[in-house]
Amino acid sequence: MLKFLKEYFQSVIAESRKIVWPNRDVLLRDSATVVVFLVVSGLIVAAVDGFFTKLFEYALSKIS
Image (cartoon, rainbow, N blue to C red; front, side, top):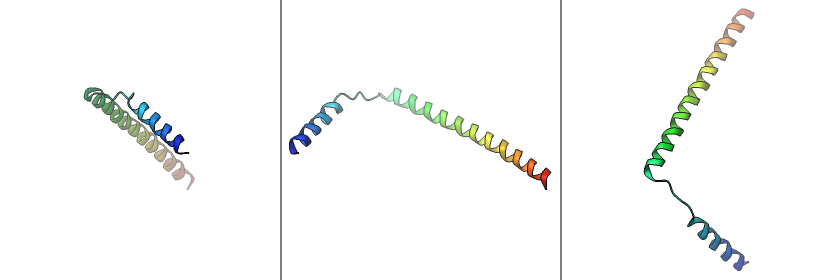
């Protein structure tokens, strides 16, 4: 069991040494892309929600 844990942590350390971290420019560009995507997605969801809210309000006003 201890041999297994030792080998496991050695492989974790070996794999973590292979990680290539992004530089500052790439990190900022990718972060900005994610933020823009989230804002646009949020606006689309809000617009669809508003549309269906108005649609159901209209439909309910015609029923009652």
